[in-house]
Length: 113
Image (cartoon, rainbow, N blue to C red; front, top):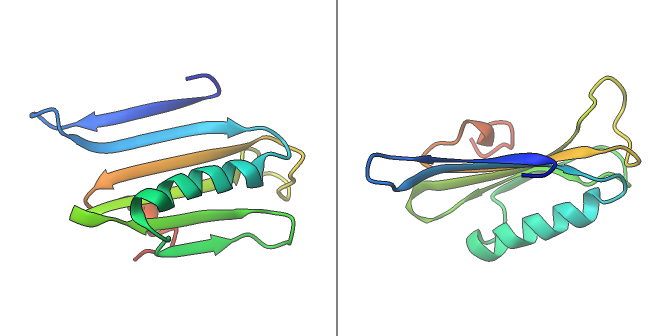
């Protein structure tokens, strides 16, 4: 995929067990991209079970977790690509969307467990 990747894990019966996607978010588009993706997940799974906000009024939330039916867990994480300096909205960030049928390791960082 341009500016990112997508991976799907199947079981022996071709049932999707996991889906992972990450892509670059252009400068100043963090909040709009977050809102679009979080809205899409919320339409499927309802409100997030947990969400963590970054410090500072101009920065978007960076982690949210959903628990869906049949043990599906979903996380959405937005983070700066460069972690050597304080995050700035005038730089590229990366958005990660992960879903799994069963426990998802990333949900710990988002506060779901």
